[in-house]
Image 1: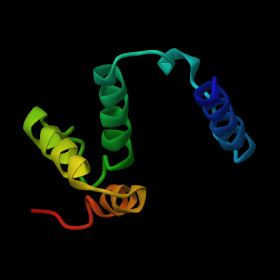
Image 2: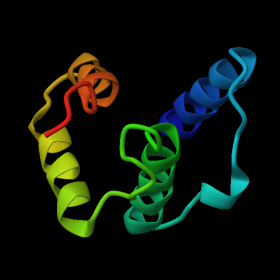
Image 3: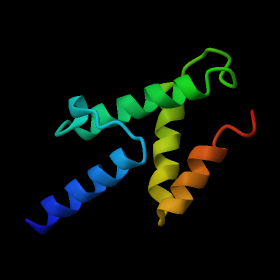
Image 4: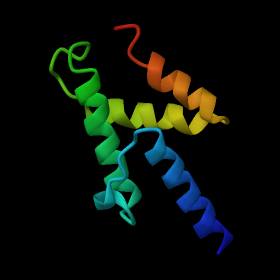
Length: 87
């Protein structure tokens, strides 16, 4: 029960900060969440990606880097700095 209260508190806080709760993604598989995140990355970085979406291999590399992070701050740095440099 404590987990339910914590989850609802996080949802309420994010809503109060202007985030939208997407019920379509509640209770879905991890793969579905990754697909959604990949779509967001492709959309947000379309210009830097020159309208070429991340390949499966590239996205797997992003996921691998994310799993190496120990703190949410590290993940934020990865997210924000991921496409600062082009190959």
